[in-house]
Length: 445
Image (cartoon, rainbow, N blue to C red):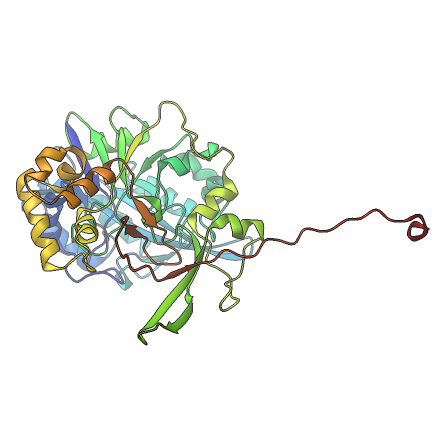
């Protein structure tokens, strides 16, 4: 059976997270998306853990749980903070946990390294290797997956991380089996680094709100005889692509840190109608790499180095390379965003967008069914030609995304639409080439 899984979400106890991130809303919106299993997130937070223990019903023999007919798996994320070669490092780690007993025991030890009640994703003063050792001693079924491995901040391979996984995890590197792509990269980008061939990849939403345009925007597709914690972990640890054949990815340009850029390096101007406009600045990493990391042309401060830049720095394969016997992936954009752009509506949470979304969900059952399996003829019976054709283009990854940068999401652009795109794409002047000339005999002397 095929199961759609989003392991990585957060609760209302994480900073910058919606107050609606609770079990009730996750259980409501998860099925609309088409998810069969959702991570609880934030199991290290004592208040959230207490709420989970009160409300979740164990599913016998599976080490999974249920609430309002939605399946849940115990998960959390921690920020490991440590010194490495005189520099402070902060790396996010995503945890899968098989039981409340294991979660309680793990929290008891982790509380010695940081205040767990401070945030749903707590800061822990420990190395990643120490975390792995503690997990192994607590319960061998706990799984640690490096989170959003390329993101500029708080990631193992991002601009402020490491050049290899071995540097980060030291003698515990063999305990790492899977890596999380993050919104700004997909499997194809990761295939360019041969050192990552021995890992399987997970993709998750890392959502901070429960709405369908956030939850499940990236997900994992498992093919299992039965949905259990043990079967999921075995598929990951054994790198079994028959049982874990595919991930759902957004176009990497949609992510917040795809290009290099500086959103605070703003240009303000008034157009002919005296309307003020505000522009951020972004740049394709090829220009920055050519110039050894370019500065913002507006404020002369360093650009935030994006994911594509880091991929280019560490890649030892050409773009387009695909190893044999690897997972596949599908590139999708959330249905709400497709509807909003096709209808030329500025906000994805407008009533007219939600109304159109509900029509499609009522007709097809869930969002993944709409995006992956609906035919043009079926779609035209329910929605407009613009929306139907955009859905099909999404499925074929034929849509253009204005790339995200420095914390700004990318934007879906449609041909012939007046899309608001307030960003300056900076193309620096060509590098001056050193001129050479033949010295005369007199000059040589």
